[in-house]
Image 1: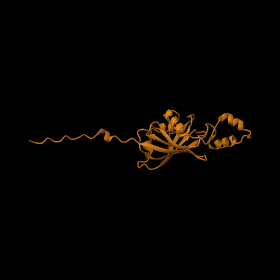
Image 2: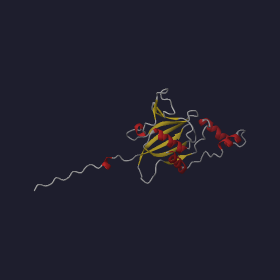
Image 3: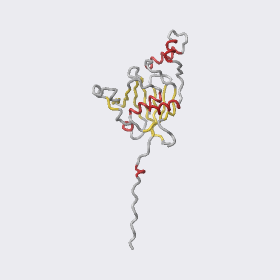
Image 4: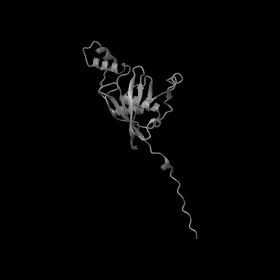
Length: 202
């Protein structure tokens, strides 16, 4: 009697599905010393989503325009930037992070600019892909230092002056600045607060 051929197993669809990747990014606010920075871990996303992650991690309030600079290209949201008037811009709502990162997973840096008047420049450093522990909810801020500057304080130069005035109780503008910003500790940072803000905005 002829032996029946062994049934061939179909490839598992689950095996074909790529493993989830978590990107680790270190974002540093430029022009300020000591440095203000955050290290975050996020799922793959659009650049427009990364904007919200950065806003939450730092404590910005999304009150101003923003864009990204990646090499010679700039990315923004069409509803906020006139793409016809500025053809150098590309749509950040249609550009995924994975399209911009190196295929070999090596570190790669680009810029995120917030408040194009005060001109807060951030270096966004892709540090690599990390393991995907299923018990962790993403996005998450894992490290950081120092508080985010108050909105509308005039960029790095204005922030430096604000700290100088707040540190001098006899300065003629001390009361004015104190009333404006209220209680402000430039050294305060908490990963739990940053993570909660990231998840709320996400």
